[in-house]
Length: 65
Image (tube, rainbow, N blue to C red; front, top):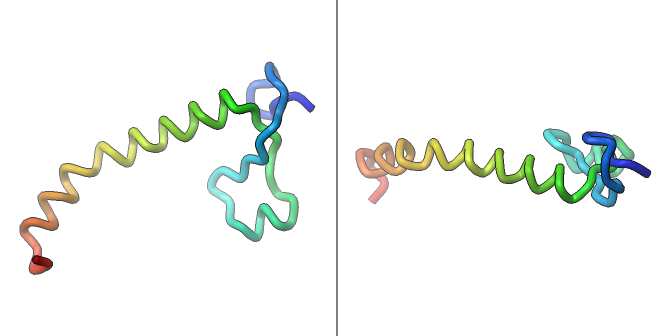
């Protein structure tokens, strides 16, 4: 089966995206290729990392020591 995201490579990964474990169990996923899965994971990680400095500053100002 071709990747349901790019339709270029073979879909070898069951991709749930923003879904849950229950979605996966009930078959609510798409077949993605490794390229699409990695690109999406990297983009997500970069977006999260943008917030890291702000979160660290907030922690320093908090009562959590």
